[in-house]
Amino acid sequence: MATERTLSIIKPDATKRNLTGKINAKFEEAGLTIVAQKRIHLTKAQAGEFYKVHAERPFYDELCEFMASAPVVVQVLEGDNAIAKNREVMGATNPADAAPGTIRAEFAESVGENSVHGSDAAETAAEEIAYFFAGIEIVG
Ligand code: RTP
Ligand code: MG
Image (cartoon, rainbow, N blue to C red; front, side, top):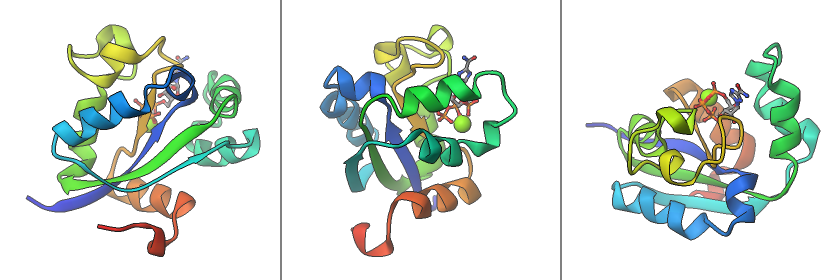
């Protein structure tokens, strides 16, 4: 298996409820190592740039408002198959469809306010990590 890195965001609904530690425990229990992490407060423009792939979707404006509504914790997770493994630990986008034990099943409030983001492919992971972190901040 290949060691990969993926970009994770603990979203405003989760930081507001002090769930960072519980969510990080889920990552670590799954064998993912947090090799970089910082708490930031995105502007709506920064959230919009990050999620620009969704610019034409009906939920885009609401998503950008939400992501800028409170601090987030951005992090780089590393491990075997980290991109797919993280998506598995996160669970489905809509918490109603998320498998038991996943972060979204346990913590998400709705399809929009769903506690975590995770990169969906190797190319997006590399782009998203570079959006938030300099190489010197990632300590594997
Ligand atoms: P993410 O990018 O945040 O990891 O989530 P995802 O891949 O599971 O889902 P995606 O389709 O990429 O959607 C990005 C985020 O947009 C919000 N969303 N709201 N109201 C809605 O119907 C709706 N659909 C998506 C969610 O915050 C979702 O995670
Ligand atoms: Mg996505």
